[in-house]
Length: 228
Image (cartoon, rainbow, N blue to C red; front, side, top):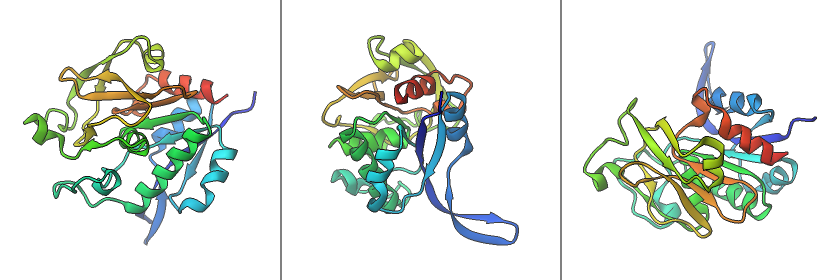
């Protein structure tokens, strides 16, 4: 059986090899490895602009919206918080267009961390720009701090990973208003949304944590199965 081609969104960042420092297309290898373990063939997508997006969508069998820096508040008509790193406007624009094209085409989507925010904003949702201020706590932003996620057992996410997941997922932003057609399906103990699903879509799941970093590949397995 042939492996389905899976697109993984990536950065433009300065990178060093030898004595050279040049702008490069970068993607953490954990995404490609997780796709490969699940039976997919990973392809890295540089954020070049909208001209190739329809070709990507028609040629690929699934899209991973990968993690990264926080989205710019302008993408959801919010006010940019000065504590947030400078947004990567080109990447925001590219990934929102990819997400919308994939939704129109009913192409399987796995949206991870920042990618979950992209999926939500693509559907008209909004974000909490600085979560520690809203909660009066940095418990969601502390590196290495784990917590338990409760998952709806009737959701596709729940069927893939079960009703409870232990995760380490530091983040400063979170879903505020859900976008059109999206349903919250996973929550932290303080009811912050940690997982969303696109209703009526073949496979449209967003999670706040990073399943590609651990040993549990069940979510990627379900994603690749949908991509077949």
